[in-house]
Amino acid sequence: MQSIPFIDLQTQRKRLGPRLERAIAAAVEGGQWIMGPQVRALEEQLAQYAGVKHAIACANGTDALLIILKAWGIGPGDAVFVPGFTFAASAEVVALVGATPVFVDVLEDTYNIAPASLSAAIAMVKREGQLRPRVVMPVDLFGQAADYAALEDIVAREKLLMLCDTAQAFGATLDGRQTAAIGDAAATSFFPAKPLGCYGDGGCSFTNDDGLADLLRSIRIHGQGRDKYENVRIGVNSRLDTIQAAILIEKLKILPDELEARERIARRYSEKLVRSNRIRVPHVIDGARSTWAQYTIQLPDRDRVKDELAAEGIPAQIYYLTPLSAQRGYAHYPSVPLPVSEVLGATVLSLPMHPYLDEATQDRIVDAVLKSVSRS
Ligand SMILES: Cc1ncc(COP(=O)(O)O)c(C=O)c1O
Image 1 (cartoon, rainbow, N blue to C red):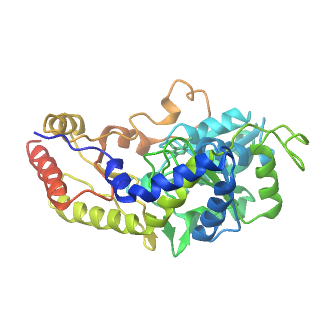
Image 2: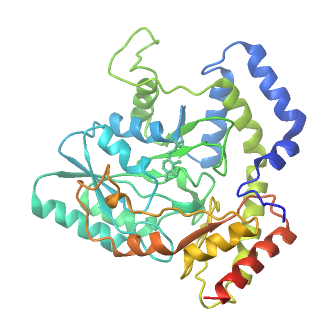
Image 3: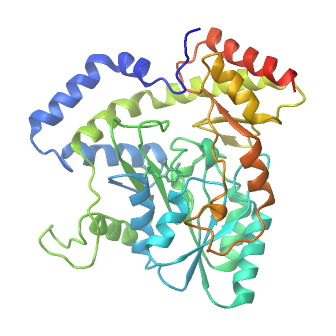
C-alpha cells in the first residue's frame, strides 16, 4: 500500500512553481546573500500580517527566543516559567542565558500551559526565595494560542514579562489578535515543517516596544551599534539568509489560503474521529483559530495504534513522549507536579496534517485509526 507523507511540502512547492524559482534566482543574482533587501521586505510583511510594530528576522526560532531573553537581561537567579510539555528549545534558551527554567503543567484538552499550575509555580518560587520570577513563556502548542486572557491577568498581577513561543503558530489568532502580537514579545520559527516554513532554518521575533526592537536588531548581529564594526554589547550571529526571506515572501502570500485548508481538514478529521468514544479530538478554545501545525489526538493503546497505522503506510508521530522535566538535560531544574504532561506523553498521537491532504487520503487515515482503535 502506498505510503502517505506526514507533511507534504512537495505539493506546495509545485503550486508555487516558477514564482518560487524566480524569487530564489533573484536573491542569488542580487548578490546580497545574507540580510539582503528581501529580509527587510519580509520583516515589513510579517509585521503587517501579524499586526505588530516590529518583526526582526533571525537564523531560527530558538535564537529568536534567546535574543529576546538576552535583550531583557534575563540571567542567573531569574526564573522563567515554561510548560513541561513542549519542544526542548523553549527551556533550552532559558538555561543558555544562565537563568532557571521552572516547569509548569499543561491543560489536558488544549496541551497549553495551565494557568492554575503557573500560579502554583510562581508561588513555589516566591516561597523558596532562591530565584526571582521574571518571565512567563507560554507555548502555542500544535498551533493553538494559549489561554492568554487568564495568563495576561497573572502576568500583570505578578509584574512579569510574557514571551510567547509561537514557533508552531505563526498565523494563529485569539479573539482576532495574532499570537505574534501577544505578550511583551513573541518568537516564531520558519523550520521547513512549520505552517510557514522556509527551505532551511529561519526565525523571527516580534514586539511593539521600539527600545526592545533596537536591542533585538543589535544582538542578532554581534551586538552591533551603527554598523557591524561598531560593537556596543555582546550579541550572537543570527542573521537570516536572503534566499530564505525570498522563499518566505512567496509562501506568506498563500498562508491564509493554506490555513483555511488546514482548518477544513482538522474539522473533518474531528467530525469523523469523534465517533469513537475512545478518541479525544483536539479542543480549540473559544475565539481561537489554530494553525494546525499538528493534529493531535489522545487515545488508549497509543503505541499499538501507531504501529498498526505504520503497517498501512500511515505515519503518525508522538509529540512529546517525555515531559522536559523528565529529560536528562533538564531533570535538575525546578518543577511543580506535571501529572497532565506525564499522561499526555503516553496517549498523544499526531496524524498527518498539511494543506494538501485530499479527502480520500483523510478518509484512509480516519478509517485506519477507527479500525485500529476498535480493536482495543
Ligand atoms: C515550541 C517550539 N519552540 C521553539 C522551536 C525552535 O525553532 P527552531 O527549530 O527554528 O530553532 C520550535 C521548533 O522546532 C518549537 O516547536
